Amino acid sequence: MASVQIITISGLAGSGTTTVCDRLCARLGWAYVNAGAVFRKLAQEAGVSLAEFGQRAEADGCIDRQLDARLVEQARASAPVVVEGRLTGWMAQRHQLPALKVWLQAALAVRAERVGQREGKPLAQALAETRKREASEAQRYAAHHQIAISDLSVYDLVVDTECCDPQAACAHILARLDQP
Image (cartoon, rainbow, N blue to C red; front, side):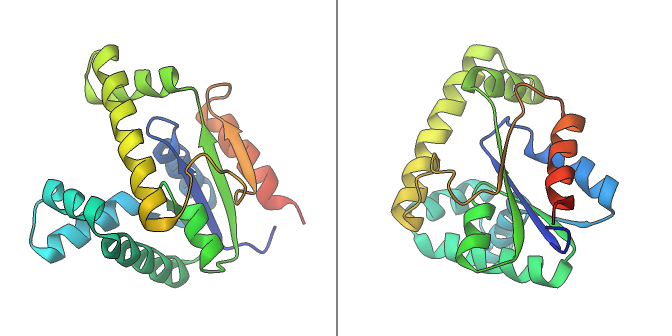
């Protein structure tokens, strides 16, 4: 995969995607595209709050398709690039982008603890909010994309970030990137 110019990093909230992306980009000197930032930009362009845009996205699959199109466009224009987002592996697969598709995973309790620490929330609250968010996202991805978020079949590499720190996760990804 040494000729790959796009790495997608996906995972549920608290799995470490942003941390791993930051470290990969620093190590490789590659550009970085974040689906959340692109989503926020689309909300701004639509002239609505992020919360309102998120509600619209739940009801209207066109917003997710618009997000995907923008991500694909930016990935192609910015390569070499690391693209972070829940569905970026699926997006690369469906748009035939030559990418190393990585999924980061960790147990719900571990991810909720990380989210709670990041957002300054008690564990019980972070756990409840993470469960609710994931249920909503799973429903949205199934309805608008026909994707079961638990289906990891499109990913080239799955890294358990519960068992390794961000540096080790990056090492796994870089090792896979260097494979012929």
